[in-house]
Image (tube, rainbow, N blue to C red; front, top):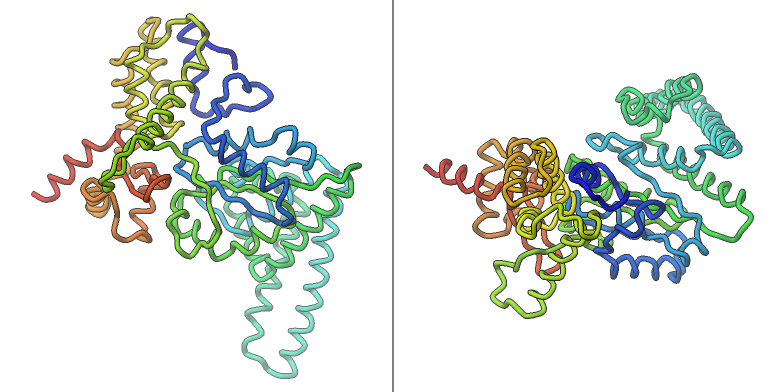
Length: 440
């Protein structure tokens, strides 16, 4: 990406689906979470814990994946083989299971390595033979002892065969896994009671991958996009009920997780918060000079995000337009970029040359109608939003409606202060209108 000199170039520089990378965009990158990234680097390099797992949490679109892209530096590269894993490209984030994660981790490890692929296939075949033996023993025991409970485990073990047929004869098994619900169903049924075996196979592949290297480097997985998971129950199942399997993958790893997990008392691990606070906690009576300085600093970070994408002396946006976009972003980087992208495309369509406050207002209204507003229809959602509007706290943190609204960015959770919640500024007035109508 090059700094823009025209509105068309700026619109393309603001495509929300584009993630900055160190290879192409180092000069444009704004290190929003530099202190946390430095802390991660220090822990990864110096902590003597082979399967260390670090978690980064925050609102969807807050820039966690981009921060992960820029986490590796020369020191990290000297110590680790760094493998970025983009869950969005591998998994259906509306439907995620720990078995999916382990299977696709294996894929990322063996991809483009024929020796490792053969090792993985042999490992699966060993697992198949082992469990065929268990199945035979169970059947034989059932004949002699007439065990009523044997059928359940038999059925589970028999579920391996459809998986092996699928895996052996579908050369595009991994490529289609994300989009094929039947692939996922068959695979999950096969490994439901064999998760430990699947984990062991992944760890075996990690060892084999390191054996291929001609250095003493360790493996570092940077697993991003799991923070975009959509179903609260699946988030709990993956990160709470099956956390053991994630953390038992035998290498160091950094995983981005949903903001909802940060208030989950049953998730014991520490999560570093990656997010920008643009306002004071309304429940805090003290508004210190330091707090205001932090807000101003965050506003300036967002200002740099847009100015870094514009060539020096290219007068493509007014200060008032930037200020309004920052205010309406709620501190969510992708929302900020999306607002400005919509404004830039409007100017381009109207054959203009500069983004004005009016263009940003138009874009904000469009974003409200097409992205955020449609998902808040319904009394239960309005009741939760109305409570946040007045008390900045939901009452019940495990309420599925509340968690869904955080996942959808209708509610923004701020964790870099005594925790508080706010309505996304783009729909704040809509919520107020709906809440008043509901009371009437």
